[in-house]
Image (cartoon, rainbow, N blue to C red; front, top):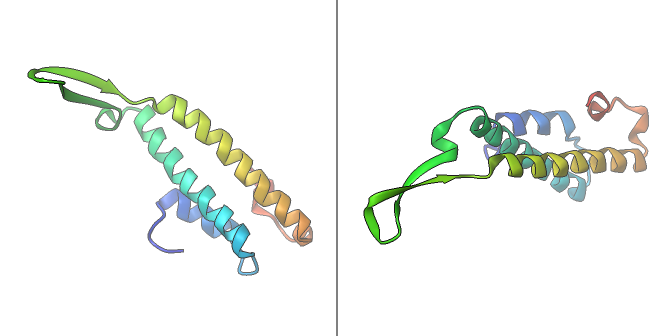
Length: 110
């Protein structure tokens, strides 16, 4: 793939993508890899990288008072994890429909 993916997304792409994949299946795999990268980022937020999930910003109209803004990383992570599982299941289903079930499928290890 190219440099648009992070480490986790790139590794997933290398495990899932086959040269014989249709464009549609490749697009699905790429999107699953992007979601993997987002999940990795959210994991960093949830495990203590305060700079990512907590910000101090000036209150509207008053630069002397600061507000604390906290992102909803946990909720987003749960939602993305569900979508990620669904996308991986869809990749596996399409591979089975294409008759590639006789070959090793890295999704079987998930």
